[in-house]
Length: 125
Image 1 (tube, rainbow, N blue to C red):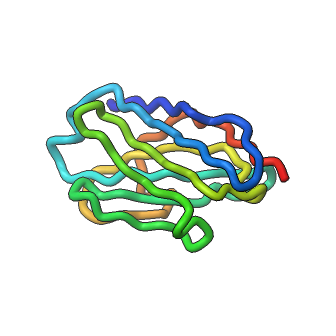
Image 2 (image 1 turned 45 degrees about the vertical axis):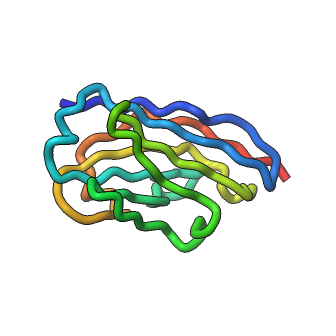
């Protein structure tokens, strides 16, 4: 089992930046093909995929964050990041990281087996 712990959430004004981190409890996933992702869920809405990264570094983004958010990973620290710039009020949500084994990237909930508890991001206008 791999446990994921998110951090870095908080409150920011529109146009500002935040960087989220997600640290995995084990390195074991690094020895296999895997992909990780950030999802978000606003009150009353479904959880949606924001960005995904494959073990070889390939990335996928949902259209609403392209050019503003960047997903990256530091394998030496078992950590996934989400750099969020030019933030908008509509980015307000609980953000979750997720892990799945296998090739490719995915922004689909059903593809992921491991989830963190989430970190809240609030963007004020």
